[in-house]
Amino acid sequence: MERMHEVPRRGASRQHRTEALTASKIVDAAITILDSEGEEALTTRALAHALATGAGAIYHHLGSKQAILAAAAAEIVMRAIARKPEGGAPDADIRALMLTLFDAIDEHPWVGAQLTDQPGQPALLELYECIGEHVDALHVARPSRFTAASALVNYLLGVASQYAAAARYGRQVGRKRILADIAADWCGQQRAATHPFAHSTALELAEHDEREQFIAGVDFLLVGITTTTRPA
Amino acid sequence: MERMHEVPRRGASRQHRTEALTASKIVDAAITILDSEGEEALTTRALAHALATGAGAIYHHLGSKQAILAAAAAEIVMRAIARKPEGGAPDADIRALMLTLFDAIDEHPWVGAQLTDQPGQPALLELYECIGEHVDALHVARPSRFTAASALVNYLLGVASQYAAAARYGRQVGRKRILADIAADWCGQQRAATHPFAHSTALELAEHDEREQFIAGVDFLLVGITTTTRPA
DNA sequence: ACCTGAACACCGTTCAAGT
DNA sequence: ACCTGAACACCGTTCAAGT
Image 1: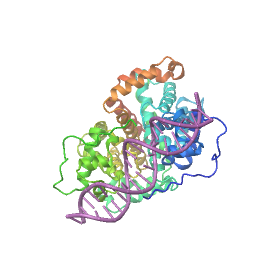
Image 2 (image 1 turned 90 degrees about the vertical axis):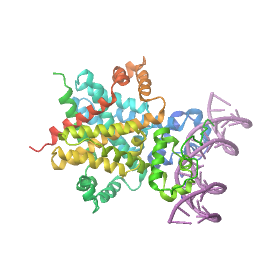
Image 3 (image 1 turned 135 degrees about the vertical axis):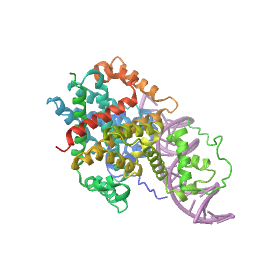
Image 4 (image 1 turned 120 degrees about the vertical axis):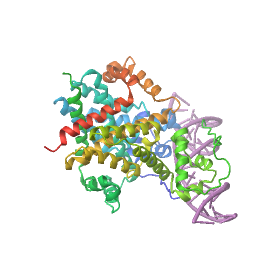
């Protein structure tokens, strides 16, 4: 066995609780663990310990680990949406919204995995709703609103799940390093023949600005959406 | 406990093996289980049983369960790429390629989860390379090739991970039913006030053609890419 | 070298029992 | 009603032992 989890953690609440446990306290504790120690560190045992309680108490308030994760992801998404900028031109607003969501995922990469863990995720509804309302402001023709909003959501989900993967793989290493390692692989001698495109873009993979790249993709979609679906 | 896995399965190889075990045989057996019984059914025990061997034999050929899944996903992606249509106009070719990949994911939805399980996934390199080569054929200006290819890959990953989620949630139920259930939720009385966009597009969620919707998103991206990045 | 399968260190979840 | 924590049914992985 290589694993050696140190369950007892310093700080916070190892004392007996004084206030009653609530669903929202459980979710907050889960977010704290997810942010500071990553997806894999969130076990029912670690959560029970952080809350100074037993496993059963958690199940009394929230029915499953999936429910905790779904609630945690919804909380992060709703916080992000709440601080979205407002009142500019429709396309500027949608860019700003997408960047706000990107920043939230960059800060809480585990959300990216959770968004696509189960269908009908509450966080996904919030995401879709907010993006959809902004698409409406673009005056996209009726039958294309759904398609346009879905395309933006799907693109965001793709980026988000890659962030989650990188965070899972090496939290302390950092994305920069992970991308550099992949780029080094793509630079390999034999790759030039077998994977010429990857080989020739390896440098960009290692050095590009990820936020800029993200918004460039959003812009591709926005151009496509506005030039294709605007009513005549 | 509610779980009651029936490990002994009918048919196939419950006899002793006659030929030696190989990595590719393990991967093929894994694909069979993943396709027929879903992600959750692929345990080392189930795989060992299907191959009429012990757990250790599998670890002798492939170092971890993640390695098996990565190899299985790469196999599916490479098979899909191998049968991609060729020789039309660049933008027609890239649409055909994306549809081929979409169909592969529709048929093997677990691939969608695997693509974003770890960074540096071999399947992802193949995906990126093939899409990138097609972007090159579009004569996209140098500095934007990487951005354009990444946008297409990210969009595909977003769609793919949603397919994986639906398959995980209810394999026998079917996507159609899962989407209908979500749509029913969005149609709820109180949703009209809190989530007007979702409410007003619920019908489309339940009844839209998913393949058509997918390619519409690809078209948004292609229009954006070609009108934004073509050299003057 | 290749394989076997019991054993190990975990998981999420349940449930009798306490307050 | 709310909570406790031991117990249950799993996991992925290892490793001494066999061929």
